[in-house]
Structure formats: structure tokens, C-alpha cells
Image (cartoon, rainbow, N blue to C red):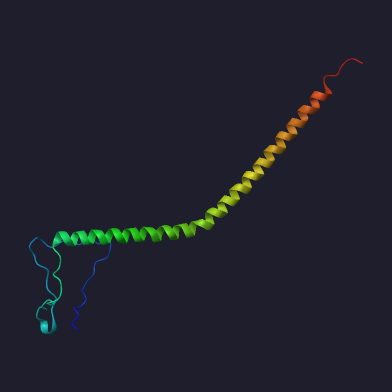
Length: 124
């Protein structure tokens, strides 16, 4: 089983990699004894540049979609308890404010009603 040696340097995801000039062939990995390794007879040739770009584009789109789903699921699972807690607190505050407003309104309404029943003092 002949394995090609690992690359000497692998670029990071954020690094810009320069494309070789047009017409420049890719270096062939060296086989045992330092000679260039021959491709396997049964191996399919590397696709043309346009086909390779389409494969890279398709795989990139699939990977991006997968990443989007994973990130969305993780964000949802992280935010769900926080949003539930924030909603419960907001409802509690709204209930207290509403109860206070209702008490104030009721107090004013009762005071107005009392003043109507008393009426102005008349001559006796």
C-alpha cells in the first residue's frame, strides 16, 4: 500500500492560497526512492479546473448549510432557557405594574365616587 507523504505545510482556513499560474502542472508526489510516483492505472484522472471548481463550490455549499444548521441548533438550545426566563420575568413585571395601575385607578375612582355622594354642603 503506497501512501503519499503528508504535505509539508497545510494552509489554515483563513489563509489566502495563491493559485499556480495557468499551464503550470501540479508537482507529482515522490514515490519510494525519490522518483515521481506513477498514478494508479485504475484511478480516475483529476477533474479539469472547471469541474474541480464546481466540486469545491458544491462541497462548500453543503458544508456551509451543515454549519448553519449546527450553529442554529446550538444557538437555539443556548437561548431557549434564557428567553424563557426573560419572558417569565417580563410577565411578572407587567403583572405587578398592571396591578399597581389598577389599584391606583380604583383608589381614584372610589375617591371621585365618595365626593359625588357627599355633594356640596348646603344650608341647614
